[in-house]
Structure formats: C-alpha cells, structure tokens
Length: 249
Image (cartoon, rainbow, N blue to C red; front, side, top):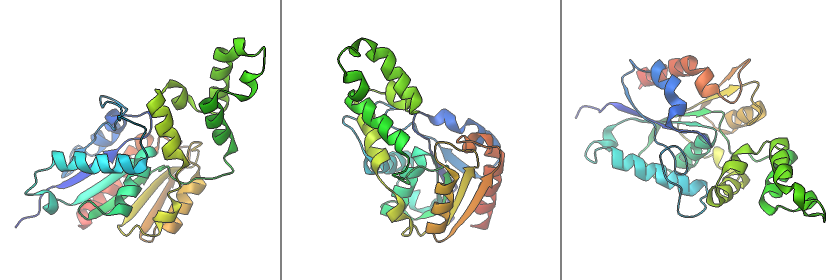
C-alpha cells in the first residue's frame, strides 16, 4: 500500500497559539507535507482545561487531538513529524518519551522548555511571590500598594504570563515549569533536530546544548542574534532542515 502524505504536528509555546507558526507555514507552503497547528487548551480559540494540568495532560490531549484529525484507516501509514516550541517542545518530548502514539519519524525542538535549573532563582522566587501574595506586600501598611506592587514584582521576575492567567492556568504554569524533563531525554529514540537562538533569555542556550548531549540521535542548530522566537525569526532555516528530513524518508 502506498505511504500516505507526511504529517507535521506543531505545538506552540505558553501564551502562543496556532498563529505562532505563520512564518513556518509560509516557508513550507510548497512542501509535500500536511501541517497541523492546534491551539493548546487555554490558548487561542481552545478553552481552558477543567482543572490545572501538567505536561502529561497536555501530551495526552495532543495525542487525542491528532487521532481525531487523522483518518483512522490511514493514520498509521502517515509519517509523523512533531515540532514543538518552548512549552510545546516540552510536550513533544513527553509524547516522544511515552511512545503511546504511532512511531514518530522525526522530532524538531525549537527553544524547548523542560530543563529545570535550581539556579534560576529569579523565576522561582517570582512564581512563589505571585502564587502566595505574601512577602513584602503582606507587611502591615504595604497592602495599599498591593496592586501596583504585584505588577512590579511580575515584571521584575519576568512572569507576565502568570499575571495575565486565570487561577487554573496559573496553577498549570506552576505544574509544568516545576517538572524536569532531563531524566527522560536519554530515552528519546527518534531522530531529533534542535534549534536555538544564542540570545534566548527564556530558555538559555545551555539548555539546548544539554538536550543535544542527552538525546542520542540529535543535531544542534544555533543562531546568532536570535532570541526565544527562533521558530519565527529563523523559519526559513528551520523549514530547510524539515524539507531535508522529509526527503530522506
């Protein structure tokens, strides 16, 4: 039986949506591949989860979403490529580790989240302050400054996503960021390309290097003068690699 057209499932980052892949879609518009870009629960047009989720919940949702959007009689014949940016990369890694989907032909990680570093104290402290609402703002006489103070703290610790989120999504953000994906990386068996911006301040370059060292069959692509938006700002370069991987299969 003839092999079906390849599928590229793209999973966006926290606070993003399917629109995050506009540039990549344009760069791949002539490629022989079906590109699927769902809004993850809590973002874009997708409603929030019914309770605070963790990474496994998002991975299961992505698997079920893919199953619903593929024809049951042909899905196992379609080469499956998964691309994840930031939080979407964390989800993609969990899917690849759990191996509950059909075999993944190739994995593409763009500034993937998931490496937990205790030394990133500013972000950890920021989340703690945001979650408890205590510390300085709980001191008698300071409560009148709470609204302004919280905004300052959120900006100081760069947790804008937390400030804007609902209670369910705030706890979800805490759940997914406290999990460390590192122990699973050595068990990722599918070929992997990793893309990173050298000026990334959200997921540092060192995280990409560590992922490359930990995932056995991986290649690392890093770009100067590029930030966390590597999937958008380097869409042409990433598309070139994707095309090459498809042609090899």
